[in-house]
Length: 42
Image 1 (cartoon, one colour):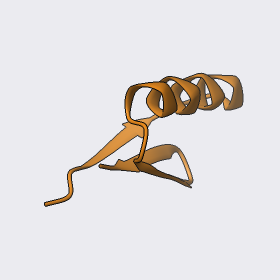
Image 2 (cartoon, one colour):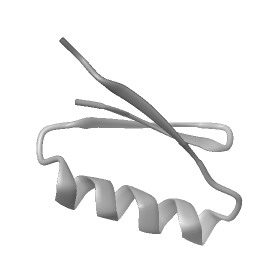
Image 3 (tube, rainbow, N blue to C red):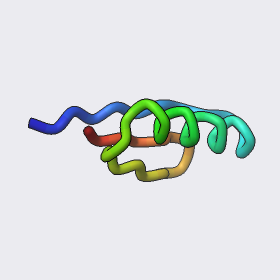
């Protein structure tokens, strides 16, 4: 079972911070970026 979560962001630097935090929290999750959302599957 996969869990998807979409996290909205406003600025580019905010996106980088969110992605790095998620990479630390979920080691083998796939992270995609679509328009103004960071989408994570784990």
